Length: 111
Image 1 (cartoon, rainbow, N blue to C red):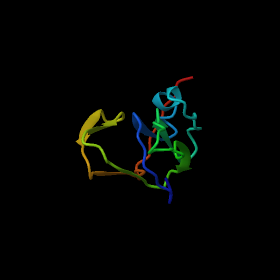
Image 2: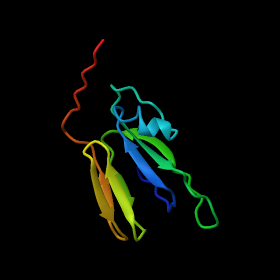
Image 3: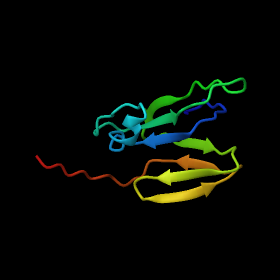
């Protein structure tokens, strides 16, 4: 996260924009971000703490323009994209880079 990195074991990593922080991320213990905020939230789900891993980077709110890199050190990992209903198999050596889109999300609210 940012310039910091560490090895972790967990049941997954959630990355959400303010629009996505109201459901899955909130239920996993993350913050609800105001929709007007240009932020991205990274939340590690169920981090494993043991002899080899002492995770400290488990929850962070970053500028929307920062990239998030995830290096895969597992033989089997699944990337799920909630907004496009896609699932991608990952394996050791794969790198996932999450960046903000130049496209805006349009929200219509009924009052």
